[in-house]
Structure formats: C-alpha cells, structure tokens
Image 1 (cartoon, rainbow, N blue to C red):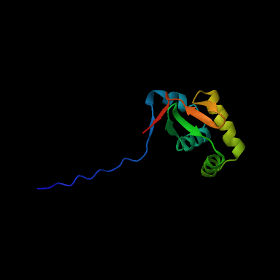
Image 2: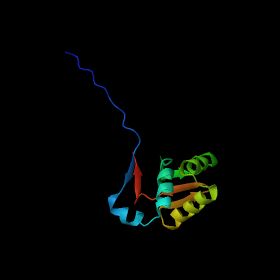
Image 3: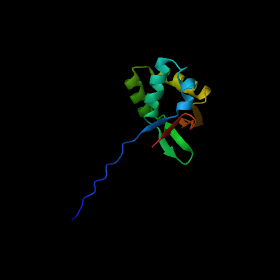
Image 4: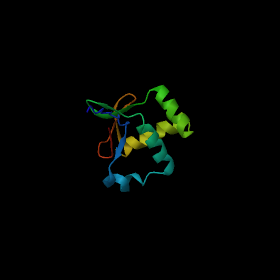
Length: 103
C-alpha cells in the first residue's frame, strides 16, 4: 500500500508575546492599527526582524489605514521612542523582539 503525504505550507504568521500586552494596550486604537499594518511588512534579517519603510510600503500602509504620510511618519517616530522599533538606517527599523516575532 502506497500512502501519499501532502505537506501544507503554513502561512506567514506574527507572534505577539502575551507578557508585553499591558504595554501595547496603552497605545491608542489608531496607533495599534498602524502598528499591526506595519508589522505585515516585517521580514527576517541577520540583524533581527526588520521593516524597510520604502515609499511604496509607506503608501500601502497609508492606504490601508486611511492616513496621511505625515501621520505614519509620526507613528513610526513614536514607536521608536517607545522602543517598539529601533532605527537602524534610513528607513530601516528593527522590530523589538521583546514584543513581536514572525514565522
């Protein structure tokens, strides 16, 4: 008897660490929405999980959140001040692994 094994590739997923939820729920509803949409563009690198905020990515985030580019830039700056993101290079941010991971 021959059995066929079918592998189903798991879709990309986001880990949110439960012990950090109290800090994250202090964000405004709008900031949480922007953050979650930004995290959709997170990828792995040798330096950790990063988001590269190219113009096309920023435009997609703004469209998805129905916000202006200035609002997104302010949110990114605030996430950096709150240590959720760390600016590495121009437009490149490392996502704090204390809060999020990807798989």
